[in-house]
Length: 118
Image (tube, rainbow, N blue to C red; front, side):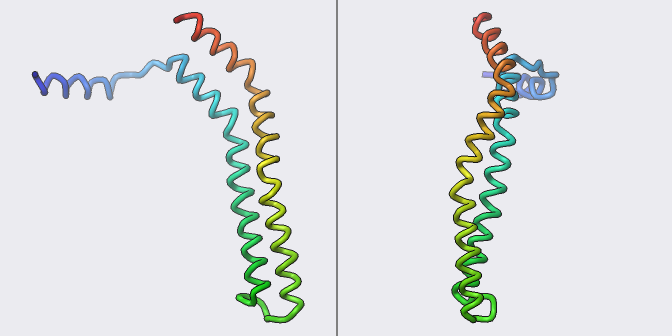
């Protein structure tokens, strides 16, 4: 077995111009359709969990003055954060559905072209 030849072919393949195949284009379209929903879900989830954390810190006297007012404020803020985390999934599903509808025609046409070629 000639390892130099195998190495040279692997290196040449790495630097050769790559043709964008229809399968790669289909994967790109799929990611493009799902990206806005994923970005929103992660961002909104992080923000609402931080809000819930601030509420917990206020209600447990970690931050704030330790008065009853801060405790009530902390509980209120914590509930708002938990509610935001609770609705995050439903907003994600709506955004995902919207993205899939937006790119459905292109994805279906490309998938048909791929399946017809095989």
